[in-house]
Length: 246
Image (tube, rainbow, N blue to C red):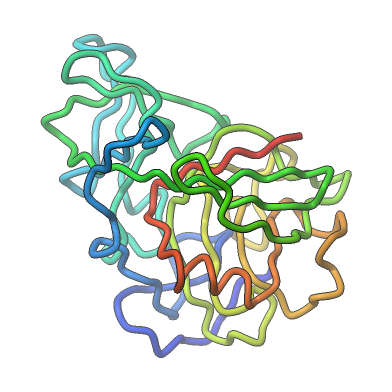
């Protein structure tokens, strides 16, 4: 993907495209007000939001610190976007979370005292062979949308991911359409792309004819009306799980 360069009128943050981090001049959406409270459902997953701009990651509850993840290193607009993690499991007051770092599928433990917990019963399932995204809530399918996916030489990686950030491209008629989610995963074959970190995105497009094909460098393309539905109608919280099926 070629990152957008012009500014968006939406207030709140900096933006430079779903595959890049650090520079750029367009704003993203501040999602702090859209994360829902916990819901009581067997299909609810936990979302852990760091209370600070960085958080230590442990190898096991009460074990050894293995790394520190800083918002500035993994978010395009760290001042406007919370640092969130999808929770994989819980042990007492410790939470094993998926990490938005390489390699894809990495997990680590964070203490409950360092995070704010919320929940969502939304989920996104991506079926690469069928070029389809299914949105469910509480285990029930709400809608399904056609997708463009990665080419054979630059495939979209399968696995468990989550919505890491939401960006507003400066020109909704450009290659990313009106909205672009950054997922927690990365291209399995590219170390960087157009100056960025080759983050897998879920975004709109200015080429609707490409929907339904193996056309991208790994990102998931949606029709602009469909990605707008995800953002504006369903208001999916950051941390929403994305299950990509090979």
